[in-house]
Length: 485
Image (cartoon, rainbow, N blue to C red; front, side, top):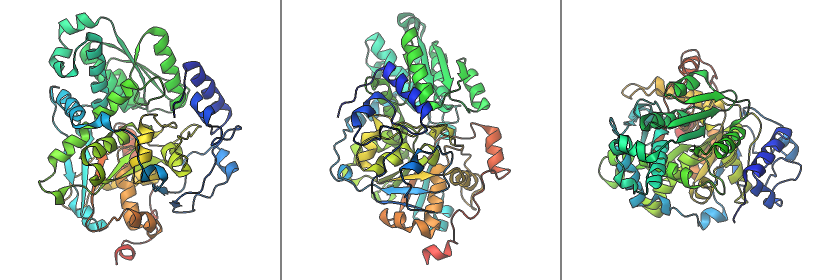
């Protein structure tokens, strides 16, 4: 189905969000009135869902109340007509496209694949065959994975403006005085919770481009300082993430800037697709780092999601490369901004929106509107969706930072550790047996995770790992011995 969107319509819809805690954003949602109550809020539909403390039985009035952090872990096993007959295209993640992005990144000074860490002791402790963690805190000097998408999108933008193929533009050519002269003045603009904006500013600085970055309310001062440290003009707005995206899009249109946003909507899809293709380089790196043989291949991938760009980039590449033989992919979100989980749970195939302040420590996942490019891929090909409160990622941070004997320490930030956190709870809590069994997680399972960031907010990292903020005591309910006997 095609959806229509204009910036004025987007602005009007976001104004409505400020009057209603939960509503359908962007003009295309108005075409779907059969699935969205006109007064705002979310309809509930029966689905294969589960949770630790309840079975997702909030009525419509409860859904309309503004929430901060949920006190439950919710899950949805993705067995729908859409997953039974997937139709979303993954041609953007073909072998040729993946090689193009990977070759581009390889030309950057200091490029090397980030470590793939095997946590064998933890895998044994949890009753799994293997746990493999891609440590993106080692990505250049940026402490996060986002530069893979931002740099490739900017590279493709420059190539298009120069009328050249991306394959002809190495980092050396991109930064050459001749290229800068041909390109002329150019300003990049974006909205970010931190890591994406820092990545855009990083590539802009190296190419001699201007850069404007807006952050949503509640953003970390440390992350703001890091963006400014890359030479960008950056500030924090009194808007939530989705409202800030609208603000930046309108500002860029007025000023003739290039919007480099990792979420997509109708009429704005080319750059977000390039960003997703850049993220897919993670898959190429990780699989090249695995030992030879089919027995070493991951059986499961747990991947975090905000708007869904990273998750769809990884899943799209796995589907394009392996087809039905791909690993099962589990999409994990912050419960305060679980738009993908709610979209999947509705079983309508339509994207749903979460409004309000989107208050969570997982700043990189605090996004209330699914990307229009990402959602169809996730809807059709993901194995399950999981919604998690903040203590789950805090547990993941502490486990990664304080490993069992023989395992490597990984410094993982609030958005980076959510997948490890939920995996530990999933394997230890009998109340999540339904999801564990649906995914066939056990002694032969090899689980691939991506720690998407390091301690990008050092003070918050210490509060959680050193001082025990967001305690997870009792999170799993029972001892491990009761789960694996």
